[in-house]
Image 1 (cartoon, rainbow, N blue to C red):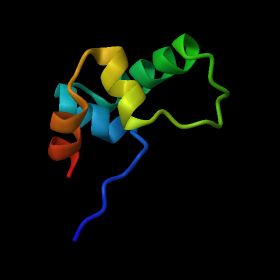
Image 2 (tube, rainbow, N blue to C red; image 1 turned 60 degrees about the vertical axis):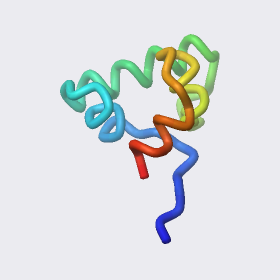
Image 3 (cartoon, rainbow, N blue to C red; image 1 turned 120 degrees about the vertical axis):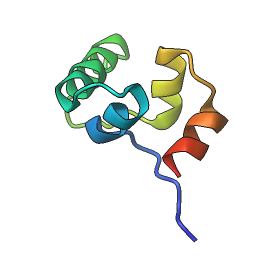
Amino acid sequence: MKTKGWCIFPKDVQCITEKSERYGRQLLADIWVYLKKEPHQFVTVHEFAAYCGLNVEDLLDYLD
C-alpha cells in the first residue's frame, strides 16, 4: 500500500499542471512568499490545493 505524502514538490506540480518543472519551482516559491514560510519549510498538499483552488481529495487521489 502506497502512503500519501504531505509535501508537494516541483515534480508534482509539473504533473498536475502539465507545465515545466521550472514553473513548478516558481509556483512553490510564490506560495512560500504568500504563506510567509521560511525557505527550509515545505508546502503541504492542503496549502497547495487552497492556493490553487483545487479539491484536496481529488489532488491526493491524483498524487497517489
